[in-house]
Image (cartoon, rainbow, N blue to C red; front, side, top):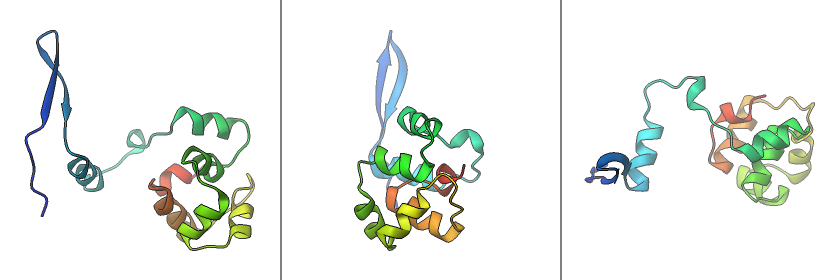
Length: 114
């Protein structure tokens, strides 16, 4: 069971502006959202830029996470040549494979779907 702690409140101009909470509490909140819609899915600028230049989202996220193909493949439990094929823009990976890759990069499957 997660035991909540009191957040740190940061003020600007005498008004609450930010609440700082421990990482494990943040992850718990994110993982236990009741409903997720498209507005909850985010992409870093670097991932969007790489995707616009023609890289697949798998490759863009892998590079954003500073992982080699070998590292990601090992963490996802697939072979490096298979990952190389999945990184091609015209690849059509299965949902189960996307789940493995997303888990290995600590992102959601929705962030890998083009």
